[in-house]
Length: 594
Image (cartoon, rainbow, N blue to C red; front, side, top):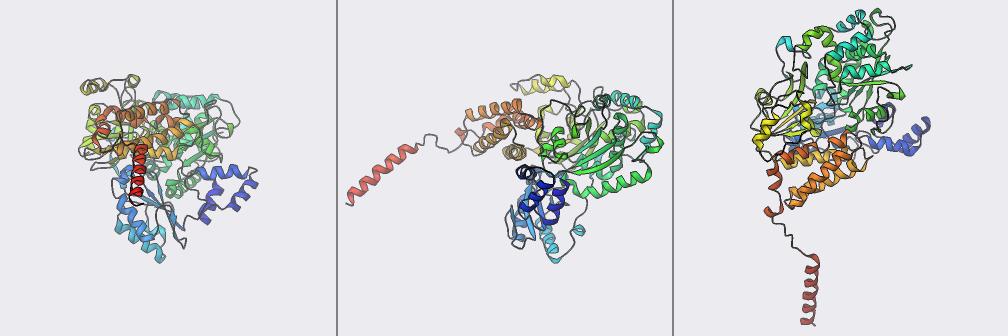
């Protein structure tokens, strides 16, 4: 994939001759290589322009300036989305969420970020590039936009950081003692899966192998999520230190950061921090004088595939294949990267470990709730006055959080991104935590929203990190259509329920939006969504209809107002009857006129 990136960036596309040479060099078929190139969004097989523009078409962007910004790009360039100018200077394309939901409308130009776009800004950017102005002078790394942290003694992530401080503590504890600390902290995967981190590390350590790997999953592709971007931008060393600590715990010598292509502008900063760590003796051989503690880190760039956030798909991508999830015959801690035991944790999870070691386990356990200790990072966007990053103590009530972000007349909350769920006012008294999480398996009927709210108030909301607010003035159906379109685009296509099912859902949603639907269409929507959820191969398909199912439960009025009875659609229209009448009329006309 590094070679494909080098060619893409140099030529602006990957030519047939390039693929022939690469296939020969790696002893794979040309067809297999074409399958790899076509899988990733940011590889092109025709010229993408010397300045390749990707405009974010996520739902928050569309509710900001997306429409006028898109028209402005098309006007200034004289092309439509998906085209390249005749002189090959510019290419204009759309892409899904690029991790800048708090600064919309946004775009990437040669993977440099441009935020808060307006038509005036677009005109200036294109004009300056045509004059020969260097792209780097027009773009800056997006602001961190940290809006809130808890009390000083309860802040874990966004507080002063002393590089290497947790690594020095490893001189006095063994790998087994370290794993025990992580297990007792109740730290779980902060990417959304929430698998116990200490348990995962213990499984990997107990698998004997000549090589093990640590992978930091920085493929933050869930729409509306940007917390990992801020962590990597503000404290890249904290992530590196967390990876090194994990390496010490399980006996791994190599670590890789799988960095999403949308964060290319962070690569140099992270690479410089890696070099700094090597110079300080925090990476390399016998780190800080600890005999046998050898660990180093390299960056691997993704190429635009949401499904690569799934750990087995990520491994396939790192091995230079299509990022398709595998069956769970083995877990990565048994056979992961190159068939070796592998730990995969996301950025927030790995950053938490050095903080726990530095503040002491006892201090950490005093923060949060009984089931979920510590703090949580939330990426907030949408209809609120203070979008950005919030570090909150687990246990905060949703209603309190909405007040904190100054939500404007909140009607629906898209919680945990497109793969998450829709929350309504009936959920506002729930807390953001993992308390009584198993109770969520119980299906509470919506016949009585008040009773639903009473029962659900005892059940916590465990967040992966995305929090999008929509007020009562928003039409919800385009939001659901945007989500469905996203999963159609991002499905790897390997299993029929996800590949075909989500496509059919988009057709059904379009019919509903046109007010051409009947009650049976709504029943089909719920039935098909359930089938996709239950029978898809990986997490993408299994979560792709979460939002739709929860929206149909909590916002039935949004769907019912679109049924056939409230439209001018003529169900009784009979094409055969009309054509018969047409033939009769034509015959009569011909008789009259001889």
